[in-house]
Image (cartoon, rainbow, N blue to C red; front, side, top):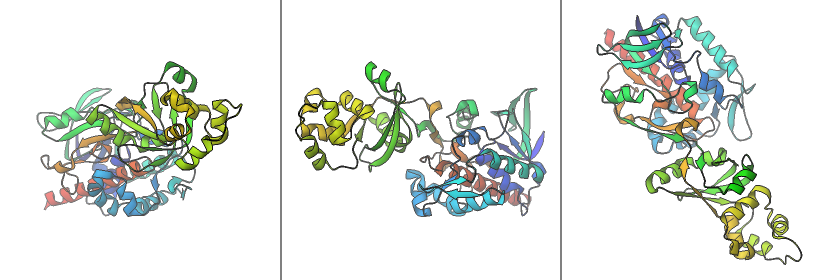
Length: 411
């Protein structure tokens, strides 16, 4: 089978690459663009990400938005300047899907769902002539340079003038992102940074008593800091083995890196972020009278339930009856994490194809005509629409880069 452009991966990056290639001003006939997806249907991880409310992007100023990409901000910036949050919202509106900005600045489709957006998008792409092949798992390159796929009918080979790899990261393997592509690229001399969990949970060595009592409990109205990073506020959940949830994901990158570097990492929790240490110390120094310690904490520090359980788990017994020491622990309770949760449990992954091996169009320098996009690139970002926006933007850049490369070949 011969195609003009083979796009491997049917997530947001791959579909946006197809969108760029199928545009009216493209020199590529959309009927010669084929999307190959390993799963039985297109966009499975995209649909799962939107199950609790599809957070598509964020409304903050672009400079702040770009800063969310940390060490890779410089590489991601050109992609977002070409197709950032505003452009993405306009594109969604062009599919007939309205969006709105939530109170946190996050942007959602009007009905909060991913499925209508994906249906409208696939309908348009199919109408333009883009072909889709599901249950086609990419196995790598054959010795002659063709693309090998495992299909229900057996192994097949595809030849293409250009290839766009949009294979995702290494989390949520059951939805298609399993990182199985890494060896194939490394065999071709492509620099791929090890895949690591991002926006992930962590293990904590809870006592049996604490784990059995509080597993599943939410810890609300707290702040967290680690590794010299600015303090962040939010909430998280206790699990049987550790911690997970929004606040934990927000500090997961420095925690993960500290674990890898030092073998240990400590997260400091402020269980009463609305009170200063001085005020809290004074409140706790009030006479207890006949009150139990539990009632004293509840009445004068607002600490009860799981927060009180955390204090007892990590605060030395002697400090519980000394107001100044107890207040200090409430404001900076050390929670030692022992490991990241497995890669497949993470919301996203860090690591991937190095930007140093790509040109400005996202084409591999040592593989002319092969482009990379999406989460398989070496970048990470927090939740809040940043992950999806960069996937869309990089997919579009790879699609436009492919157009330019094919046009140059025909000259």
